[in-house]
Length: 124
Image (tube, rainbow, N blue to C red; front, side):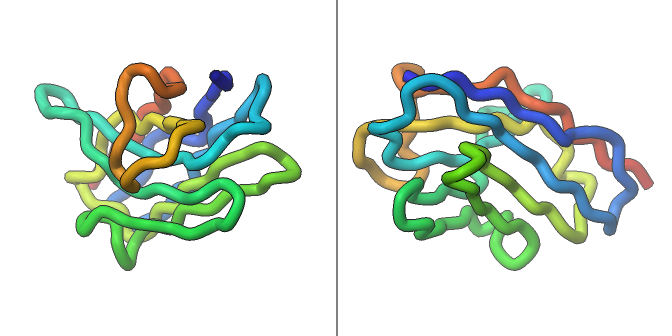
């Protein structure tokens, strides 16, 4: 497994942008794919977007498509999530996940690597 640390969260006005980062450390030679999830208070964890680490192929949840962009830097071992036109409903703790095993874009479970999350708050 790898270790993941998210950053970049904060307070942002609705309509503005924010970029999240997820730093990867540890043995990542077998890293297959990574993803962003989010969890708002009282709600289940929700899939946002994913990317194949080697090829850069991306996939988005319907709620993120056209506003969010997932990307990665293999050299810097960092995953990103660019979030534009933020809405109130985007407020949540955003977590990154990493898997060595193949799977569907949103298929991550507790056995994979997870970060602690970074809080995103959207204000009026």
